[in-house]
Length: 244
Ligand SMILES: *Cc1c(COP(=O)(O)O)cnc(C)c1O
Image 1 (tube, protein in one colour):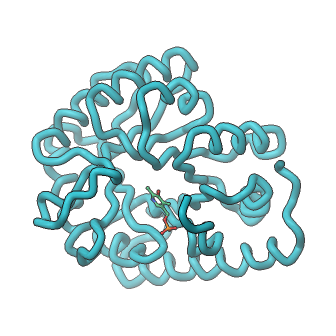
Image 2 (image 1 turned 90 degrees about the vertical axis):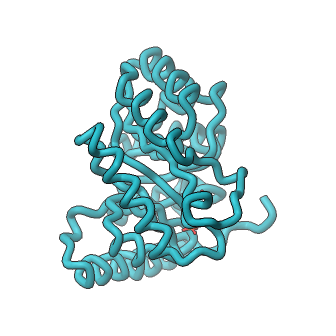
């Protein structure tokens, strides 16, 4: 499963990755930010472990996944040859999957409930690891956009409640906040709202300095708004198989 992809696919990935790195560098320059402040998390969901191996060979260290079984299988397949990969779980997470996720993930970007923080804390303890946690914020309500429950996220006073729970939980480190720009919303406006929410959380938790925001279509707006972690999938890997 971790076999290298054919040379044509490896070349395609190299070209797409270079283009994305170029976009990130240009966005950083336009925003007057250092590229070193930015972590590119390549979201490889639905693509085979061989693609991840090819990306690792191109210098990718941070890999994002959104489905536990798929992520666990890929992490296990890649661990022997690529022990330095850092796995970021970015999808909706059920409490009964936390134990599995804590075995391979370095970071979870989708912590949106106090109960999930508790389950992740127990799982991190069982795995003997520490997990970097981003509190996922649902920006729709604050922006007056349509709420999409499938996307998850905490809203209003719950953001700080979840952040407090993460900060107090053994085995978890409160890294910062994560959001997806609501559909049909101006990304710049959405990420500005996320940045304001981040300021409020930092008033209570000064160490929560990271912002996970920006995907293939809106990474420039995210960099301009202060994102530190960009979660980019299709711009690097190509279109995902539809309807899954
Ligand atoms: C799939 C996914 C991404 C990557 O999206 P692209 O538009 O393919 O770049 C980013 N964040 C989350 C939470 C995702 O599920």
